[in-house]
Structures are given as structure tokens and as C-alpha cells.
Length: 295
Image (cartoon, rainbow, N blue to C red; front, side, top):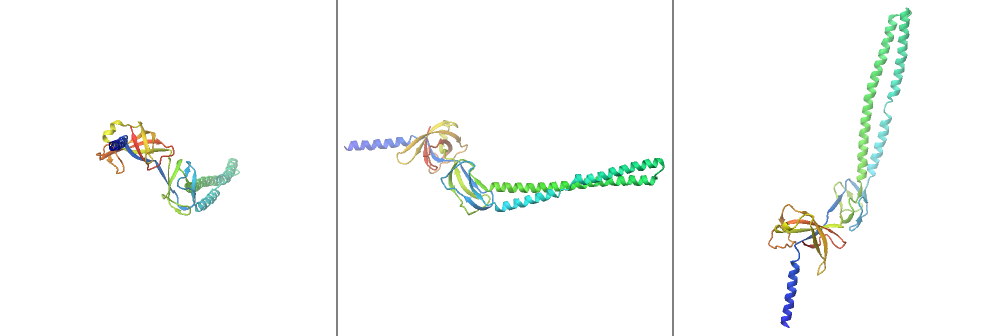
């Protein structure tokens, strides 16, 4: 009986040792996370999300108070209307002078005919032509002045439009939306708090496509390449393990010291290379969970 018991213990130890040698590398499941930060300043008047919520890209989840921005936008709109109304009517003012010039030209022609017949003096002709030149000079000066005024008004209107567009952009940025489709991992703010530009509001990730950040020794690099399909074994504790198909998507170009939480095939290896292995999540895999790789 003692021999049988000893033999059973030996088999269990051997099986345990064989299981430990099945993996080629180990690692931790991770995901590409996105931290969403506020782009404007103001009170969070709504922020309706919780950790674990599933969001769709573009889905609005919160709003920063835009009352002050709306008032500024209204004021700029009024200034725009006032500026547009102050624009001089160049055509009307020029038309009046052109009418006077046409009338004076007719007067000059009439006096010239009279001068030919001796019914008018040279002085009358000179005075009439001088008046015509004066009117033409006034028209030229008016057009130059009006053109400068119009340019100034146009510049003012453009500046107001630019300010208006800036405010519209700030209002747009006041809407907090999910940048990707995924799950909320952490929430850093609550409704009613004050947001400032750059303040993190929440972190999310697409948990459907995750990866195992594993570590290989230098001697193993010859056996792996980007695009290579491997088997990923997820450890759920105890003897519960599941296999998933994985694909190598990234291999580090530089080595690093072996993380304390990582086991390598060669326990003496001090330097390892990080490798990302993409895995399709069936809903059971969790971030931070331990996993093994079999080539």
C-alpha cells in the first residue's frame, strides 16, 4: 500500500511539472484604453455613466454648462448685424455724384456751343469745366474713402465671425461623447463637479479585442514573428483553463528586465522581450488576468 501511495504522489508531481512546462511564455491580458478629458471649463450639468457601461462611439454621455458661451454667442450675433447695417451704400452715394457729373457735362457742352456762336464767354466755359473736374474729383475721393470704409467693416465682420466660430467650437466641445465603442473602466468625475480643460473624466476600452502582453526570452525570438498564430491559455483559477486562438501583432525592439509577476521558460533569464498577442474576447476574459502562450 505504501508503494502504491508513493507511486500516486510521484505521478501527481510529474503531471504538475509537465503542466508547468506546457507554456512557452506568460503574460497579463490588457486592452488599448482611452482616457476622455474635458476640453472646456464649466460645471458638469450632466454626466450619466457608470463603470461597466457599454457605450457606442459618438454617444453623448455628459455636458459642460454652456450658458455663458450662449450669451457670448448672442452678443456677437448682435454685433454682426450692427456691423452689416453700418456698411455704407456705395452705389447710392456714387450714383448721386454721377448724376451731377452727367448734368454738369451737359452744361459744359451747352456752353461750348454758345461759345462757338459768341453767346457765351470763355470764362463761363472755364468755370463750367472746372466745376466738372471738381465733381469728378469728389467721385474719385468718395469711391476711395468708401472702399477703405468697406474694407474696415469687412475686417471687423470677419473678426466677429471668427470669434463666433470659436464659441461654436467651444459649445461643441462642451458635449462629452464616447470616442470609441467599448466599456467604461473608470469614472473620475461626477455630475455637479467643475470641469477644466485636460481634466480626466472617464477611461474606457474595447473589451471585445484585447491582447496578452507576454514576455519571451532572447533565445525564443527565432521562433516567433508578427502575424504568427499561437494558442493562448487563460487561467481562471484552480484547474479551470480555456484556450483561445491568438495572433502576434507586436514584438518589442528592445529588451527589458523580467517583470516580477512574470514566469519565463528560462527562469535564469534576466532580460525579456514584450510581445502583444491579439485575442478575441468571448466575454470571460478580464483585464489583468493571467495567461499563458503556447507556440
